[in-house]
Every structure is written in structure tokens, then in C-alpha cells.
Length: 234
Image 1 (cartoon, helix red, strand yellow):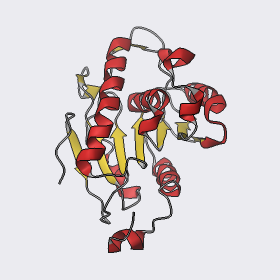
Image 2 (cartoon, one colour; image 1 turned 30 degrees about the vertical axis):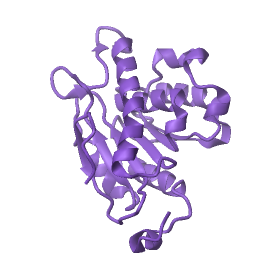
Image 3 (tube, one colour; image 1 turned 180 degrees about the vertical axis):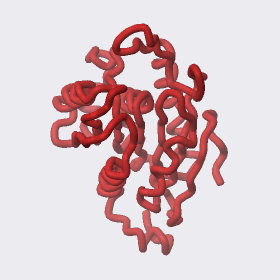
Image 4 (tube, one colour; image 1 turned 120 degrees about the vertical axis):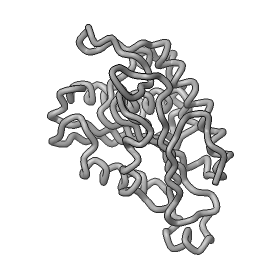
């Protein structure tokens, strides 16, 4: 077992051992905790080492968040200094986690939901070299990402891939916000962007979990589950 990261976390070890496991980091939404998205790991490739993080700020009336929200506005206004602090902490944490876990730095994925998806998007667009890809589920675009100078250079984004998922019946973050994420990413990623809408509200469904699982599995490379089980994978 590797050393615990600086974030409070819940860890799901790979069901199929691998010398250098691919790594998935789960980022929950506001009001939840590190256990909220962990069931998603049950639908994923058995080679993945899954680490589900607790966001650093306490949220009202319960749970945790990656940044505070002013609920008096529509949509709620994010506290951008906290969002930036969380983004920077995540970016600093990922290489240390890979080293501690003995993971494959070329196969690191983020899976974020709601506010956690906004953070996954922020890390992906500012530090793309840390990731193989990101699943962005029910997100808004944080305002600073609309500024080209705050994002990584186009050549740095050349390897990054993203899956964006959003529910058409989402009454918390309307599907229009998901389409704004698509509009931001399409010119940056081109064919490396996959966008899907589902007839669902503001939650991860069995169908969206399967979408995320299939998308990640397709990007894990040629190593087979059998090779991983025998210990001969890369």
C-alpha cells in the first residue's frame, strides 16, 4: 500500500495487479465527500488504481467543496481564489501520488462530477502534461479558463483527451453549461473531445458510468487484463 496523499482520500486497489498501474482520481461535487464517487470504480477497468479525494473546504450545510459558492446569484458565483488554490493543490499532488503508488505517469485520468468536474477541467487545461485524459461530468467552465493566457499552450494540449457528459434534465447545472464546456474544448482538442448528453438529471447514472468506463478502457493501451494478471504488463 502506498503512502496516503495530503488530501483525505478513499482508495480502491486494482482488482488485477499490475507493475505500474494506471491511476484514476475521482473528484466529487459540492456537499459530498471522498466516498461519494467511489462506487463508480466498480464499473471501471480492473487494472485501475482508484483514489477518491475529499475536497479541502467544508461546505454548507454538509460535506465538502473545492470552492465556496455564492448561492444568491444565478448561476451561483464561485469563489475563484479557492478554486485556484484547489486547482494548484491538485496539480502539485498528482506527480507525488504517481510516484508513491508506483503508477504509470502516462496513464493518469481524472473523473470529476459537478464542482469536481470543473476542477478536473481546470487541471486538464492548465497542466495537461500530468494527464492522459479527463472525464468531465456535469460541469461548468470556471471563468478564468475562458482567458487563453490562463490555459496551457496549444502544443501542450496535443495529447490530452476528454469525455464530457451532461444530463439533458439537469436542474442544478443546466445542459447549456455542458454545451459551453464543449464549445471551449472543441477548438482546443478537436477529435480528441467526446461529448455526450443523456436523458438524466444532476447525477452519475449507470449509463454515464459505463460511458466513462469504456472511454478510459479504450485509452489504457494494448496491455490486456490477462497480461496484467500475470504480471507481464508494462
